[in-house]
Length: 350
Image 1 (cartoon, rainbow, N blue to C red):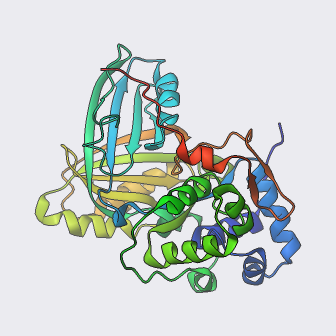
Image 2: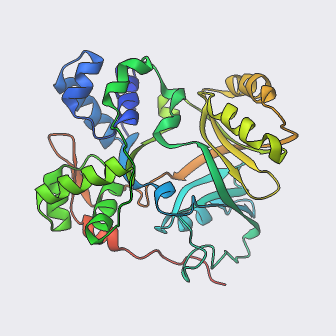
């Protein structure tokens, strides 16, 4: 197995892709002060080795519920199998093993309460699962590409020209949109030509529709990273209890810390959840005692170390079997339409 070594140019490239996942190699090269070929070569290496992937996603804030968290307490030794089964469902995201192998955290996309086959409607009942708690997400303070401060190696003003402006507005989603979301969920940098081939629509229609979805904020591009490879070996979930009168202030202050990759108000006994990314335990201790300790109104906090991330933001996990890396650095899809139409698999029964 090839050992991937990350240097400063790789980190700068990742930061640029976090700002705009579809920025061209030439745009990124201009920001970094290197050649287009260098950027293309670096991207292909990181992408093909599986330590970096850009994915195109449907913004949940624009289409209904922010989603749900499930926290499942498991019999020791069963977490891996449960997480793998959940990862095969298209309605799940951010599946992580916590606290050794005794807890699984799973995100559920959108408002699935009324869907018969949704995970919420069929909460896991399994001898290996000891307890399940469901948390509805009420308000997001930090998340997505706006919360990659821990990755910043270039000044913000230097990468800001890459950002795609969002104007807002209402967009009615149709068949083409669903096909695009399915294909871009596999690789957000798929070319317009390959998207046209995969979806069966013309390249000009695909290009125009993607611009409309991005301009409205319905389509956005996230960056999936193998954090340990990039030097971040201590990631932790924090579950905090804050009085309602101070929840907004605490959440907004929390979102400003560069270590915070995600923060949201939730239902449940802990009403403020956050994911912190640090280089090691010493850095996390300093973050917890100085920055978390300064937050207004935090009465109680529980921490849960992330042992492994099984699935990130995309509905699909990349295995490499149905795609190949082309010379221009794009992932060429073999059957993106079929991926988009795959039904979510029910892995638990009532």
